[in-house]
Length: 280
Image (cartoon, rainbow, N blue to C red; front, top):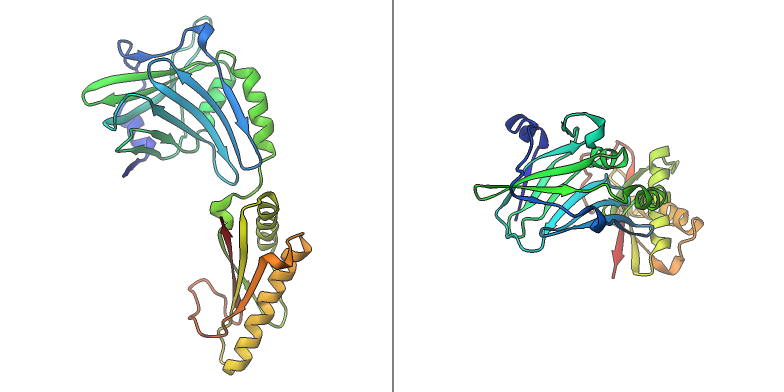
């Protein structure tokens, strides 16, 4: 079970005063390290925080940047309080709140905290600040101090990886719908972009079992005509994937005619083609 909250609400409830200095988890400077790992689907930059667990910046293909905190020992009673950036002492700046950040998700069983749209956290670390995450365990305030020591070197690899991520991840490609006219099967620029993103994802994987391409046609035509038209628009989309390097043997085309009702987004006079990725 997960609890989702809007970060803005916490910023109002918990103004940016210093978090707990008594229950603070942090690394010694000479023990602060960032570990980078990445591929075409995910880039990850993580740090082990002494006594607490792991924090990480994670960029998934097609998704906004997220920041996660996972404790090794603390159970699922954690609640989220807020985020502060702590400038270096010689900068003579006060701690300041980081915003705008996205929704915060707290796993009620494990206590894992996930902060969506976490680019401000990356920016603060990049410019030399530390980041403090305020948490509560029951009635006890906790602070997780995220060090920027050795961050500049590691973040270079992370940003290079992020710039080379595929445009779409599995969540975006697993089930897509396109609307085409049987008389002039043309796609919008946005649909072309999605076709290209799906094809790139398929080519990057060796675990794709099948690409299901289903055609549907709703009109006043006879059933036999609608069946033929649904086959034509499905074949058109399938041919685009073949042109982009997808093996024909991987593609399964099916025509359904008018057997299924028109969906609420379907333009008048157009059929729809649903593309689904079956992955092992």
